[in-house]
Image (cartoon, rainbow over all chains, first blue to last red):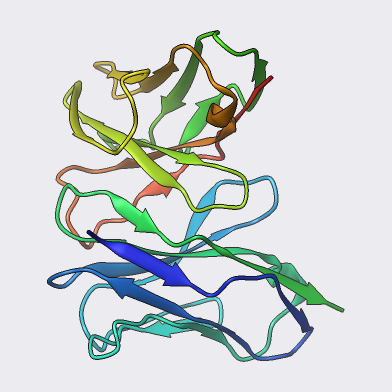
Length: 112
Length: 115
């Protein structure tokens, strides 16, 4: 079946540091890939997405590239802020009408 | 533009009781999905409703049931609550058919604690 594996946290960084969160997936065919963010006490918000190989999703300084050859969708940000402290989830959707499959989440803590 | 709204935000139940959670989808959306997020874990798909019918179901027992109303709002019912049902229950709406490129909009969730 489909699965998503992401690096375990917590990841603790200083403000303005570079952030990378690794995400790999297992799925047949060509899933769409997503990063969602969950701030404390809130639901999930879509951060970015990519729907085909070599697509790059970007939003709010975050980027991720759909790598079919390595089945990966790593999230990066060049300079994090305290407000980026949250839990980040990598997810995939396999086909129309199908469900989102999530990774376990990675907690990121950015210190001033 | 109202997003997905869920109620109640928090609730406490005891083992064996039943609970009903409610969800109003984002304006213009007609499909509702429910997810269970246990503490420290990623959300797990429970089921999806479209045109007032359950269209897909994840690996959850029959104690979990749902309903969708003509106005597209939805309810999640859980019977015979177990301690392990304690979780954040997330509702997500979308516009059917849910193509691979479509985006699900999530509500803030209902946090259920079972004592």
